[in-house]
Image (tube, rainbow, N blue to C red; front, side, top):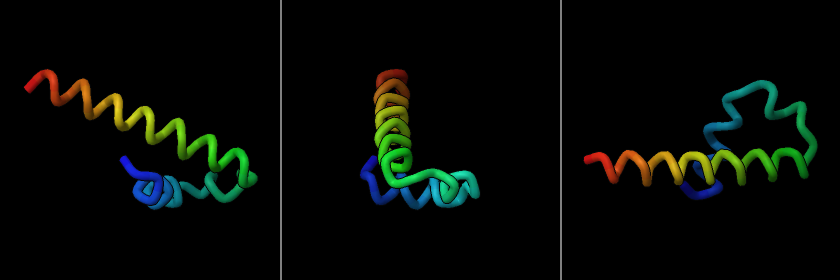
Length: 46
């Protein structure tokens, strides 16, 4: 998942806007890593 997609999804949460810039960047990184690892595990099962 690219960062732009992650930000788009995370912006749907009102809590996203209560974070400062550094916290948002960390959240985007963590979310992207989680989604990328999820997509890799689901691809292996099929």
